[in-house]
Length: 173
Image 1 (cartoon, helix red, strand yellow):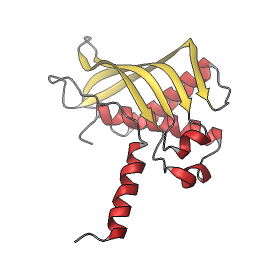
Image 2 (spheres, rainbow, N blue to C red):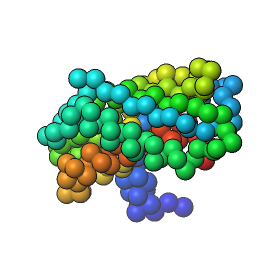
Image 3 (cartoon, one colour):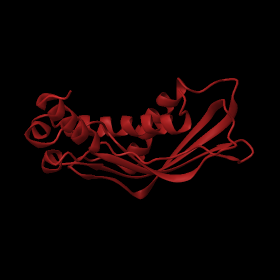
Image 4 (cartoon, helix red, strand yellow):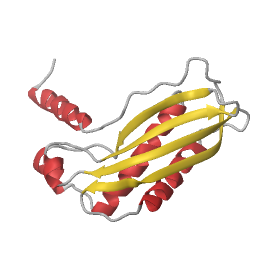
């Protein structure tokens, strides 16, 4: 039997989870089961930027931040006995949500085009856009009050993208 507080808790949980942005992606059906990430290549164009909240990072700095986070996230799941794969990430933008967006349970996102291929060029994860958020967002006044600094929001968003990518490449781990 549900009580009013249980229903309210479920409603809040649903609202919080809607703040997470992640693109549904799948590995290729014939992809090797074990993978060894041997290279992570992250690129950015002159149009790559942080938008939304004011935070100055050059395209090269964004690419370096994403490469560092993705390499660290994939290191634990990579298996030295697996098929060697290369991860290519072309960063589009990092959209940091302002306080008004937080009140509406929006979350900051990083958008990139990603592909993962074996040494012979076979796709493990076919080229696709991945949009990933930086974490859970609580709607309303609590969301506004709990808004992180712009630096923390940026770091959380980059880390959230790296975790999403790890879950795409290594879905069973």
